[in-house]
Length: 453
Image (cartoon, rainbow, N blue to C red):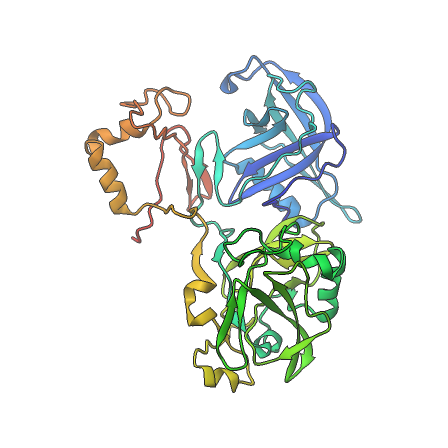
């Protein structure tokens, strides 16, 4: 499914089509080729003097891409890209999504998009010079503020450094990678370094910038590949841990016990190290999976779901699609658990797969929660909301103090709304889990809490 989650949209034929985005269990982005343009005079619902209908075609698609585009009809909001930014006075006409199935060429989609007649660029709604920067896939932000789909399957797991694994776990026949993915071979690791300009500079392009996950000086770090390499440390052949924020060593699948291939990133070097080197298979190192084959182009992103259900970012680097986080996996593909081994003597005596957190502290690896809040913030609990309501004078009046006044974002009469505290709450509506549709826009706002039912 072609859902972009970071970076820029590649310009194909500027002014030859239109960029659209819509939200349906995650952000979808697409470049459509333009066709016939018709003018009509209706459009009162869009607060314009008129609207224009754009006949648009997608070009050749896969089945998954075609399915993704069909979600546009049920989207909570639809935007078109102009030189004034994303503009939301857009809709798709009911019944207008038509799919053509060509045996050789694959799928094509045509749709009719209705946009307001207001012209926000000198070329109307044609693509403009500035390529849109894509937002996070987690937060929906637009006219109605921020909306998070709590039950969305595209929620990303909060991976910090990931687990450390011995080589036996990386190469176990039960597969630490889910279907379609694998631990990279030595040759594939070499390809990665070559594409990034050679080992002497590739490490810097793979390392996350700053000093949160690396010791100073974090030499040469640009993370231009969006690989997000972090100094996850190692578990040594004594069972002891060392070098958190200093090194990231990650396994390749090539080798023979007691030696396995690996590569390294270091805090004081821009080098992608250990080309052709081996280390003891009992060490605990990180793992980055690679997809068997990808339909993505360099710089495009997607997601990967692990054997235990955790969801990771992925990034295409050259022709290879990689995890953009260290592996945080607890199961093999057949459902068997990868044992966690904390005792040092037990660890160094293993000849079968095992995992551990750095310093046997789970919080180093990550948390099996989804990325919804920024650092220093959290999803409020039920008690937090009670405190807010009490401060605002109780249930009978608090809602009015929180709602944005007027009837732009709320239906009339918007009773009691004065937004006296500046929260500017709007009628975002909600997704009905049973009906699979978005309803209640301009009529209701429902808040998620972190408290279990």
